[in-house]
Amino acid sequence: MTIQTTRLSDPAVRAFVAAVNAHDREAFLSLLAPDATMADDGNDRDLAQWVEQEIFSSHGHMEVDNESNGGRALIARYSNDTWGEMRTRWDFTVNEEGRIARFETGQA
View 1 (tube, rainbow, N blue to C red):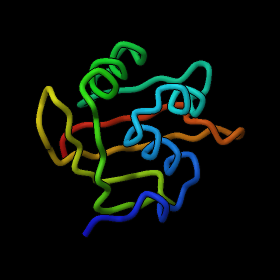
View 2: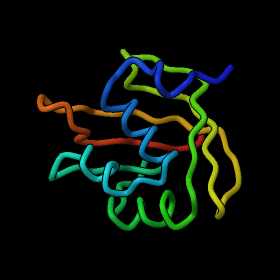
View 3: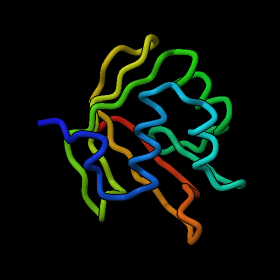
View 4: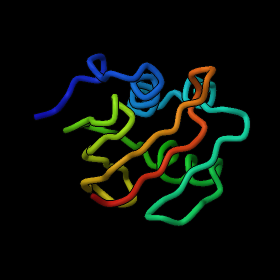
């Protein structure tokens, strides 16, 4: 069963999912710490390039099925124009300012 975005526990993660689904690049980028990093399937990737390719230019969308670790770990059905829909896991590190310092994603 899908968890409504507005009901996600962690405010930074909730805003991340909302920005992805609204295709709001400005809101998305404002959530990230200046030195934010990310990994996809265990490999560190160029954050700006990955976000553009996998989220914004390909109309990424997240339907969250499960959250754990206080809302900082998600299982979601992620879809975009490139890969279609797949079951994915997302793990977030949120810094003291409430911004996302790192996220890791991959197939679940």
